[in-house]
View 1 (tube, one colour):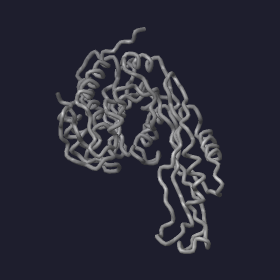
View 2: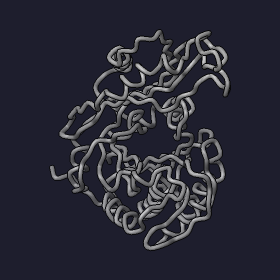
View 3: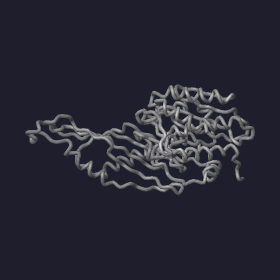
Length: 360
C-alpha cells in the first residue's frame, strides 16, 4: 500500500511552522508524477491540488495543514504504531489525501469533483499568518465552488462538528516593588493577583449542546510571570488567560462574555486587560450533502473542543467538519504516533466517496 511509505517519507521531512517548504514541494512533486492532469494553484507555501472539474458534480475538498509541533525525529514503526513528528496531527491525513487524489484521478465514473487543499502555518499562528487565511483571500471564487470540506484534524476517527472560539488576553496586576527584606516598603503584585487566580479557578466549564453534541465554554490561566529578582518584591504580575467558547456568539459577544467572567472572578485588585488574539468559533454550516456524508460515514459524532480551520471555511459559507485518523491525545506529543490500522481504515472509507450516490 502506497500510504505507509509515503507517510514515512513525510515524517522524515522536518516541517515546523514557517519551515514547510521542503515538505510541500515533496508532496507536489509526488502528485505531479502520478496525476497527469493535476491542476495546481500556489500561494506561498500553500497549494490547492485539483482534478479537472466535471460539470454538474458536487465539489468535495480534502483539507489539511503541513506544519507540525513536536521537534523532528526519524520516523519508526513499533507495535502497530508509526511514530513521527506530526503523525496524528496531521501528516497521516495528508498521506491519505495525496493517495486518494491519485486514485480518484484514474476513475471515469466518480461522483464528485475533488480538491486537496494543503496549507502552511496553522499551528499557533495569528489568523493573518495562517496559510488557509491567505487562500481564502486569494482564491475566494474557487473556494466558493466547494460544496463540502473534510478537514483531516485528529479526531479519533469521529466526525467532530464545528470548533470552539479561542480568545487570549494579557492581564497585568500591579503592586509596588521593593527589597524582599523590607516588604512593608512595597506591595506584592503576586499577592494582589491571588483573588483573580482563585476566582478564575472556581469557574466551572459551561456545557452548550448544539446539533446534539456538547461543547464547553472554559477559561484558564495558561501562562504567568512575576517581575524578576530573587530579592525583589514583584511590582508587577502578568498572565495569559485563554477563553474557549462554543459556536453561537459573535466575536464581539464573546468578548463581552469574557469580561463578565473576569468580573465573576471577583478580583479586588486593579487590573489591566488587553485582548491580544481572537479567532472565532465555527458557526456550523449545514447542507443536504453535509448530512448525507456524515450519515454515510457511520461513525460517532462529537463536538470539536478545540479551534480548527473549520471556522474559516464555515465563515465563508462552506459546510465542513473535522474527520481524521489521528488521535487527539497524540497531538503535539514529543513521541507522537498514529495507529496504522486507523489510517488504513480511514483510507478505505474515504476512497468509497468516489462512488457515493445520494440516497435521494
